[in-house]
Length: 260
Image (cartoon, rainbow, N blue to C red; front, side, top):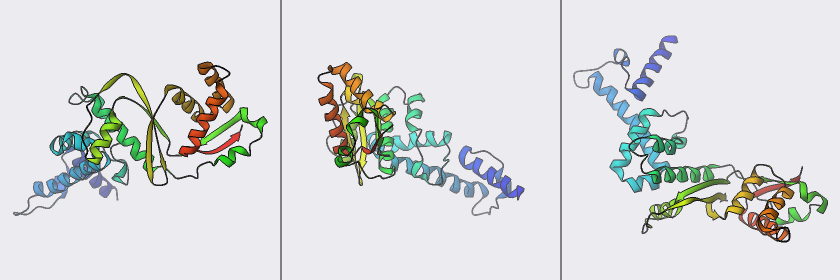
C-alpha cells in the first residue's frame, strides 16, 4: 500500500510540477513511448484546469481572448493545485495571482474583474434561505427594536471597486458594446445577492454601505440609528433607518430579525 501511495504521489507531482520519477513505473512501446504517454495525461490535466478557469471567469476570458487567457491559465495552473474534489471551485486565488504577477499587476482592471466574477459565482452557489417578510418585523415589540439584530441571506456579498468592472462584465457576458474603461479616485461600493435563481447587484451610497456592513457584523438596529444620526442628524435618522430597512426587505437581503 505504501508503494501505491508513493507512485500516486510521484504521478501527482509529475502532473502538477513536471517532476521526474514516475517514468520508471510507466510501460511504453515503440509506437507510444513513455514520454508520449505521460505527456497525454499531463497535457490533459492542465488543459482541463484551464477550461475550468474559463468557465469560472467567462468575462475575463472574453476580455483577454483565447490565446492570452490560456497563457494566463497555464501560469496559474503551474503554481496552484486544485484542492477540491470538484473543479467548479478552482480558481479562487486568481484575482490575487493577477495582482502579484509581473505580467498582469500593471493592469489592475484584470484583478478587479476576476474578483467580481468570483464573487458572483459565490453568490450563485450560496445556500438558499427564505427572506424575511415585512410582517415578521411588524410583530416585533417596540421595546425590542433598539436591540434588534438581523440575520442575512447566505448569498449577500460586498465589494469595493475602482474600475467600472460591473458594467464591463455585463457587456462582455451579454456580448454588447463595451463601455469606455474608467477608474475612480475612490472606490465604489457594490452589493450582490441572489433571489431564487437570479443574481442581482447594485451600487451603494457610502452611508448605506457603512450601515449594511455594521449590521452584517452584528451591530444592533439602535446602533445603526446612531450611525445615521451622526451622518444625517437626529431628526432625519428614523426616516433614514426606515428607508434602509424597507430597501433591504424588498431586496430579500435579510432572513431573520431578533432582539439580542
